[in-house]
Image (cartoon, rainbow, N blue to C red; front, side, top):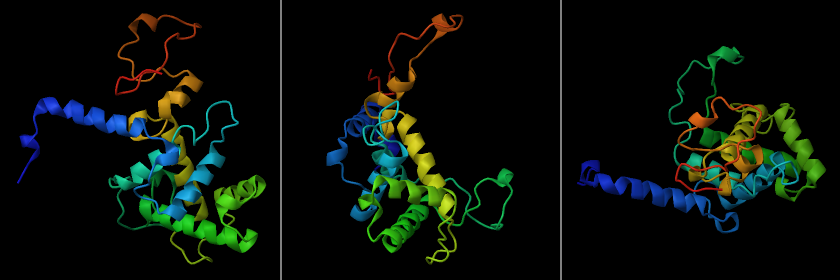
Length: 224
């Protein structure tokens, strides 16, 4: 049986580089999700597009492949390090951290299903087909916990928990290093002036009120 010891040490950076190149070069229109089903993917595309729209001060979620980041994170074990055993208090103190009974993967599966169920009941069509104002209303209702997932058949999940997971993951995908699938071409970093993974800033430590002149660099060494 092959083990990690059988892999030449010199090949490891090449493997990492190939993996990074594969995700950094992905075109969203050609990407095939590895976690989400086709209907779930349509919801994620529409939701991300609305959470981080292209008409803002920077690039939008779809321009930066945020859905790719979320799909890859869920496929590769997001939340595997979270303690899931009870007890799970109904109204836990914020200091207790995560207290849900569903994994991030289960959260997304249930959250998308119930959000779409609500959309069809209220608007007669799935979320991705709604007018922008109705998308806003539905996402806001999720955020404010005004949609009862318990009444829709899932008492273990609150609408706000699903929304917060989705919003948090969208933000992470927008600002993460491109090797993880999001922040395509470091567009988000360019927009906010973040230099990325440059090796040293010693010459800038004592420089104040001067705009940093160099563009961002990704972990893989690519430059924007």
